[in-house]
Length: 199
Image (cartoon, rainbow, N blue to C red; front, side):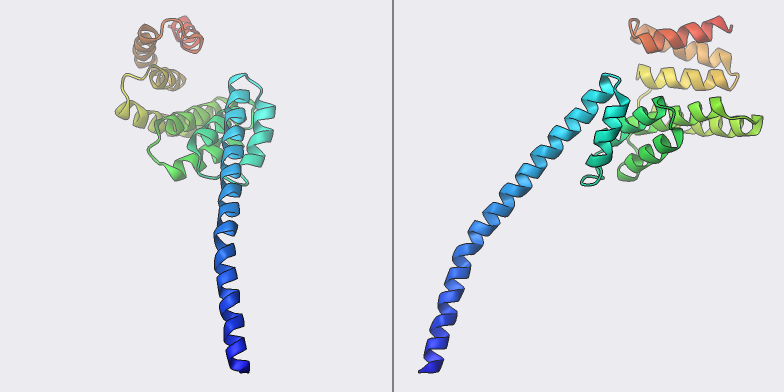
């Protein structure tokens, strides 16, 4: 008799457990969906702050964001650019390399890494260090030119890198091409003015 009651008790518990499982799974699914929406909102806020030029606020949000998502290339590259323009080139380089660890062929990330190397080269104290960093920048930017030869922003960065290396004729050719594609872009216009002033 005791065995029969124990068996019935176990059966009842099993049915109860089966009945609760879908509710538990549904609650877990809803929590995951809320977290995903929250992360998406955070991601949009980070990018929006970066676009508005509020690097400090973007960086603050980013440091919270990466605690839960280390795979979002757009956020990592955006933040690498924020770090770079905020003068933190070491952090910029580390951040863009995380994006490249997810997608080693990402053009935006490669261009950003090239720009960071170029900026590091511009700040380098020794001629040897400048040469090394500009060479690294050229290696990365040439990957983007191979993949997207008509992209005016890649072409502009390449022009600046060649200019910094003393290859003024190549720099002038590339910046002319970029300016023809995007005649109203301020970044390209400023780069063109710098390169042409030195000829």
